[in-house]
Image (cartoon, rainbow, N blue to C red; front, side):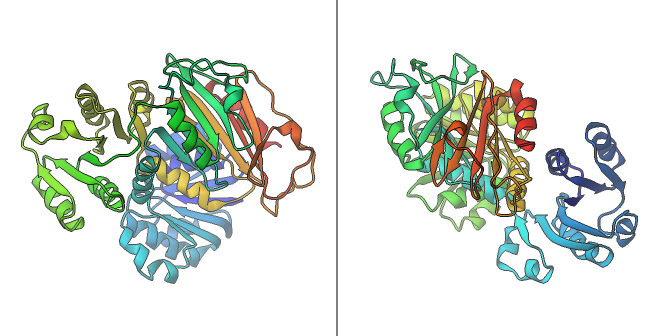
Amino acid sequence: MDILIAGAGTVGYSLARTLSYRHNVTVIDKDQQKLDRLDEDIDILVLKGDVEDPKTYRSLLIDRIDLFIAVTDSDEANLLATLIVEDEVTVSRKIVRLKNDAFLKSHVLHKLSIDHAVFPDITTANKVKALFTFPKANNVKVFHQCRQKLISIRVASPKREGMRIAQLSSQDVQVVGLERQKDFIIPSQDTQIEPHDLLYLFGNVEVIEKLSLELDTTLPTSIRKVVIFGANRLAQKIAKALLEKPLEIKMIEKEMRLCKEADLFLEGKVQVINAAYDDHRLFEEEGIKYADMVIAAGWNDEKNIVKCVEAKEYGIAKVVAINNDKSYYHLMHKMGVVVVRGSKAGAHYAILEKIASSTVVTQRLYCGGTAVLFMRKIYPDSTLIGRKIKAMKGAHIRSMLIRQSALLSLNEAAYWQEADTVVVFGHIDEKEKMEQWIYTL
């Protein structure tokens, strides 16, 4: 496909890197420094210009594009760009990233012929909400290509210690990773489960939920009291999403302006506390130490980490941090914090899901960035249908096929069929090998 991306920030950069593997990508931005970074790191075309200026698009060397993606930091610029680009170039599909979810209820997107709009804050809020469906989960990853989920569970049950991985495996669920003493491994079927192992289970949600009750007998089976540190835009969206659950929610914020905004946005349904201080006294005086879960949702990752550490010191077992800077992702995981990627990472994945093409491969990091998975679905237009399946080999790699809701090894299926989904899990050191294999099936 010929793809044009408006915006060379964090989201634009990550999209260009992913999509350039099999597509012709051009990125527009008026920041020459951002364009230089793209030009040095990725084999794409870059174009300096204002995405809101028609003259910018006249500089393109093509008169037709398959996909236009607007991901600048300005909603107004993104919307205007989708309108202006069509005056200069024929566009087949348009995807836009928006911060203001008021556009969900307006007719603007339809009038601008926008095929898909992505609202990253809502995506992140829903990821946090998913943790309440699986209270024993360390993390939950959802995929648009399949109903299966990737859920991590900490082993905290004497009954399961010493069991072999094979005893947890079936066509409904597979163990696709194991973290033991801070090291990630791809276990064999003969690997024995040890105390405190963090198991990564992929498969049927109902089956994993039942297994979680047996694997972890220490964490509560339900969450009632929640504390959110921060009252910024994202924190407000998280609180609103959690209002659908029977929860007692407290929100802690030092800035009075944000407290007032949050109280208005949440219609007084959440107890918003303006904290004049930012230390351990909060846990005592505001009763935070009695919470079942603490969510640190500030924009500063270092402060989020501090709040999670303080919560752990008070015996709060479930602590969640929003991760805005990917450089802190690994550290958060190592500290036993449940990590939910922030809005920018969420936008990247959400946009890839909207593209829904056989040539677009989903990539997700897990286990604090020490492991990676690739997923590719066989859509009706795929040239793979009917072709022979070639195996993926590697000591630190695990591959499987999802066919009609069953998890199969690649050796159990001879030829690709429509609606098949192939998934490869492995150590991050094997990333290049995995990527090469799945793109060249």
